[in-house]
Length: 407
Image (cartoon, rainbow, N blue to C red; front, side, top):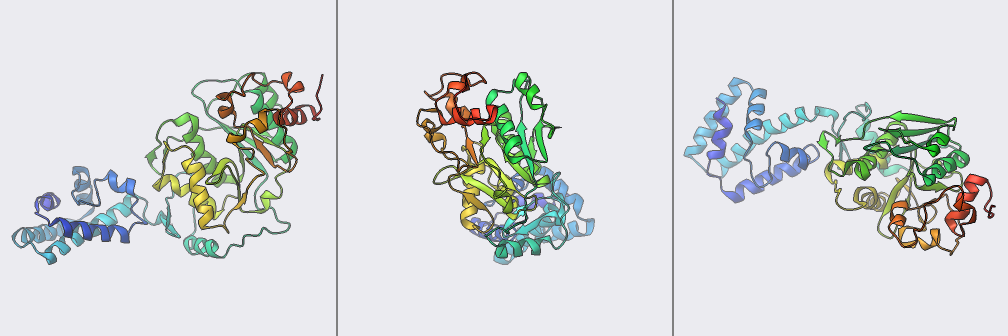
């Protein structure tokens, strides 16, 4: 009786018929069947051949009576092969396959949000049954202007530090955390890590009263699919920064971002990000409430369109495109979060000191700087006293409370 699907693979299909019908059915149910899931059980758009595991799994889901009726249909199909029989066979195979996939993927935990799919996994909230309607309404009606007084984003700052072995916290990391502590004045600074940093600078950070160390393991999978390597450098933190914001909301900062003024104005929006260049934003600073629809759509890109080999694709290009499509869902700062950018390092580390007083923050682009000609010495509490640069000014303001040269 388990041969009822194997018989299908022996049928001499007409290629055009098979391709058109399968593509049509696939498009109708695209919000349930994601491409990675489809590939994992052997379903390919140009073919309906199934793997042995899929055949056995679907067989287990169906009763003996249904299998007998399907086997009878397939036997008739072997004798008469025409358009009607091709259509019947596609319906016979696609309908059970559809319900099988739906059951495997969590049933009604899939929600269609303006043609975007979100799977309810470990970190997803228990959405109410009317969430779909509510979210679609908010996608259309949510105003672009922020409320005058209400702060939508909780005053919580998140940092993520993942490492394969204990590593020393560097001076610019200390400056980042101190700047957030002094200027944002958060209720909590949550430091998410799998291995705590070491060194004197880390001991200084641990003296901050609002600091809480959250031990967590880097994400190795998302929505049930393994994350592609490299896994400690960027990909895991890129995913987890959205996960922690989805869980609690707040302000995510890269550890090479120096805060230069309070973020209260940004916290009035459901979600705020900053431009990095003309065609992308930067995920190094994300200010979001935990129920922001924009954050939901952004997370979805890691399910359907995760491209780890393209630099800043999911953290920069995807949210940029979402902003262009849904400008009412996110507030974008054009210059005050990430400018000067990585192509303007001379304005950060060179003698060309810029006016940074209007910036919410200055992104140091530390790893890019390390590989540039401008990198001459690792900054510390002594050599910043005489640094004649934008970075030197900001570092002195954070560490010593003045931009003046120190002795």
